[in-house]
Figure 1 (cartoon, chains in turn cyan, brown):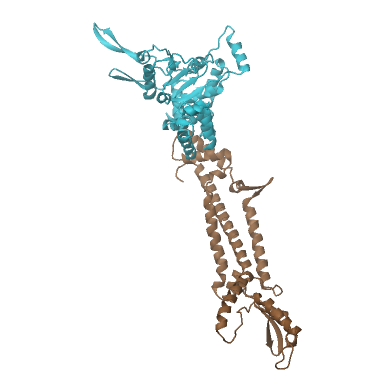
Figure 2 (cartoon, rainbow over the protein chains, first blue to last red):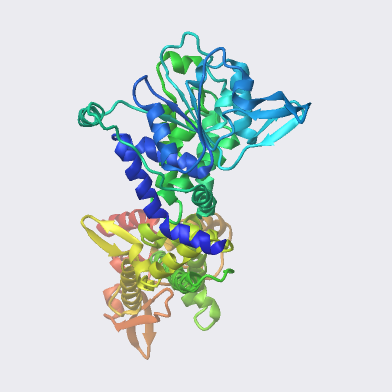
Length: 316
Length: 287
């Protein structure tokens, strides 16, 4: 087991480079976004992707799933989606002339789940999914079913077209390790996108990492050393969000855990065997932005969470 | 330092060097502060006072000993404000990983092993002198190691102290030390004496008590000597042959007063009475 870990640790930079290369075949640019999703994957946390329509959220998630040899499923969230449509349901079937109950697993029973436009699902369905995300298990009737590791949910939502949506409550947003914004591509990138997707052959990705390798990398992520000083600094940053001017509610201790884990994953991705302050600074925005609730006055003045997080990082 | 990683040996080596450097810096600071205090005591005459009155006893060393003790205490207080942190003096690129490795020295994982090897490689290149060089102060474009600057300052101060205290004992230097304090004391004494001496008539009345630093007249084997006693510093006295008595006082018939204002006499009077007495004798001389 240890030998395997040593070998995977040695191969890790090459594995990451290959994954990036494969994703790069399909997704043009968006390197920070790709890195943040890989951070989520390594840290074992879920990621909420937010962008305007047409920026390739779904394509990105499908591509990342395609590079792994993991079971992938997709749920297109709509207001009439029921919890059982996600978790699964118990069916009655005939067995040897008699009748028996059989649990039919829903799409949540996969390693990578894409919950597309999660804010269009009803609060009841959202709750069912988010409970599965947190507990990594599904309870149907009196039976509880464990979800297979790794379990990784990538949910997408767009900030416009709010009609007919059910914004995720703050408590449920907290279940996501990262909230990642996808920005518009640059003109060169857009030109490249046009070139790639207006021909006959659509780019395809190959599987370059196995489930076992991913689990080992997740274990290695948790082993990345971090100094006590940096841990204290991370806690200070999170605590500062609770008393910062213009903030109604600050981040929970889950944010501190997330910040450390995500920083460890970023260090590993960058081929570093320790966490540096730059990892914490880089991960602070995606970790904290959905956990900081602004006051009405801040929102009225157009202050954003990212601005407040930047101010906190400067002052701590 | 517990743990079994090899980098801990290098860290221990650097830590010892750093500790030695900090202790030397602390002693240097203490010596600098002590020297400054001692020079101050020389200026205001405390050292002279102690060495004059307790020339042969250990009390004469009190100013020097006190300067050293206060120097050690102040240096200790100053040292408290700066945190004892070896990691801060390592180069930026190895500081954080060394800190991470040290804080996780009890962890046994593949990543930690890799980090330990990496840190060991980095630390083995660090020399103790590099830690000292990282403590720099800036003077414009030039960087001067703080240690060298302080050591240089101390040498200058010690040289100055030696020259200055030598000067105090020299024959040609007038007895300035302790002057500010003795002037203050003169005034206080004069006020006190005005009240006490008015009521008491005793031998030695009018003597201010100030016998040091002012010329007196001594007769040794019929030779008139101008005698100056130096206050403190075991400076001793200056004696030189002076003019005959006639230079100071003129002879006169009994009952016939002839007043002559002499600098010697005027100088020996309390400062606040000099002008009055001088004017009195001038008027008397004019008749």
